[in-house]
Length: 404
Image (cartoon, rainbow, N blue to C red):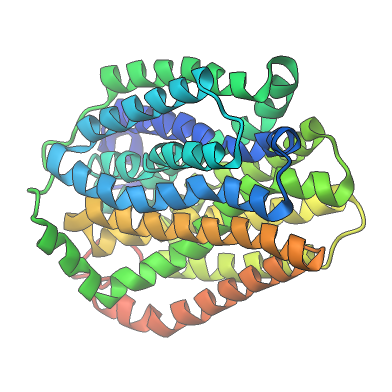
């Protein structure tokens, strides 16, 4: 099959519906980050409390991705996605009409928003099963570009909070989520060739495979860096450069949008030069720019440029990782999407929480950013160690038509 036949190779309405569902789910998943400045002011939160508040949805979403991955394989992606969306809409309705006047209530809201983060384990299998192996990187890159919803949160949430109050922003989110649910119900279709569901013990068998752990770690760095920064940069720009919540939101949106839009490019690049080669380049660049950011740049504009470059690297890496996952675990794509996605969420939780704690303990974000840059270097070394085995076993020409 020729590469130019991508749009004829699968079911385009399902791919676009998966993207839209994923996009708005991610907007809601990280909504506490752009609202954190106003929430912290009203509730009197410390730097570490702000960090944990914005990190809680990331951890909840990470853990729920496992459950959602299992649900996808048992109920098929479309039905699992509808269940998740209904829960998120119910949680936002409670948050809008309820009383959120304590740190504990915000952490509870973060747990509910984690269900939106679990949309990852629905959208990617839904898209993956509709396309052949040689187009997996591109298909999953397009579906995964739904993480651009994090940019919409950063762009609009702070100004809406000033105009209507941050709690009412949670109610306003119900409008686009309702539209996304309708679009999903109308256009998304499950692939007829979905693998038969397995027992829980059979799902756990995949964890005996070292390749599963490798892919989980690699994604914990790329997506962990992306989601952790998406949740934390509004706070960062406000505390480091004194920007207003709206200005900090605009700066964050620029960084997040860059990382989101290049995810399809990462998948496309991996389809053409191989996922390992593409991912190796991205780890090096991400480490370089995160180290540059850790030194505390003198101006907010310089910081935006560096963080945009870091997010471009991480976003491209996200697409590259998910070019590799379905090549190795095509018959376990549901549970592997959940596991790999969980690892990415855990990485995001670690980065967001560590930035808050290091700021409170040392007065600077340098240590947190430096440690995460170190993880990118470790990932690069690990990928270099396994590339020969991956290319000669499950990545051989006899096993797949895709480049590994």
